Image 1 (cartoon, rainbow, N blue to C red):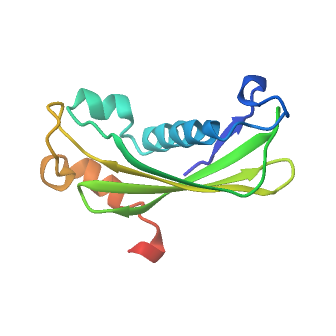
Image 2 (cartoon, rainbow, N blue to C red):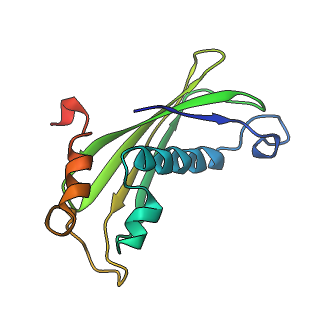
Image 3 (spheres, helix red, strand yellow):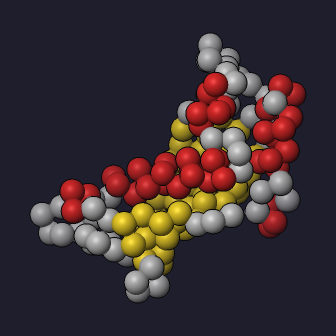
Length: 140
C-alpha cells in the first residue's frame, strides 16, 4: 500500500505557526479514504452498496509539532477487524526531518443505511476478504 502525503496548509496553523491539533484527525480521515480507495472499497463505493462506516472512536498521541509547508507521511494500517468493527492505526512522520509526529487510531463500525449493524463477512464477503488480508501481521 502507498502511504498518504499531506502538505500542511497555512490555514491549518495557529497564531504561533504550529498546526492546530484538530487537523491531525482530518488528516487521518484523508489517509483512511485514500487507503480504502487503494484496496478498491472506498467510501463512495461502499455507500453506493448500502454500507455506512461511522467513526466510533479516535485516539491521538502527539509527539512533535508540524508547521506550514511541512510534508507529512501518513501510514494507515488495519490494527484489528472482526467483520463488524474496524480499527485503523496511523503513524505520521515529517518527510523533511524524519521526525515521528503522531500515533493515532480510529475505530469504526459498519451499518446499513437504516443504521442497523452490518456484518461484512456475511453480506459483503469481498469487502471482508480485502480488509482481512490487510490486518497487521502481529494482530493475525
